[in-house]
Image (tube, rainbow, N blue to C red; front, side):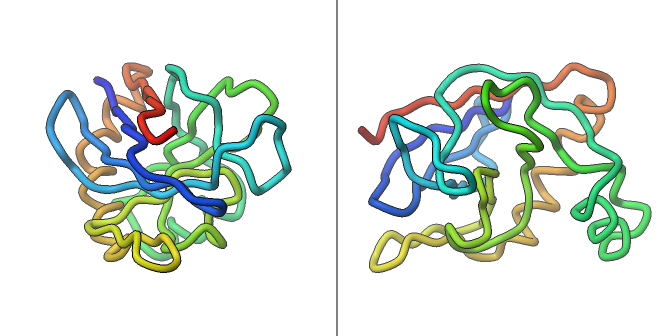
Length: 148
């Protein structure tokens, strides 16, 4: 199974993308901005293909287990990203919520501050669609830069 993050628009703080799973539109994404040199918590990961696993420890995992109960089986974790650790797919609305991670939303706004909205709804939809593939080690994600 393949998640595709098609980066379509960016500014000095954030990047908006269209997210599909196996070619089907699921939601929008928001990440930090592009930088040639990484700034911790303020830089999106490099374009490329990565495996996605499930992380079952850490603050996000505990928070989501409490929030979602049995629905939550662990955080979607983008693995083996050079110079980055603990890149997750999670809920949030603006670049202040990202720290290098991928946020998801049902809608996206590029007027003023870039943001996604209805993040919880988008997260639940994406998560339910891909979690079994992530648990079985059969989920990948590809990030494409079409915004630069």
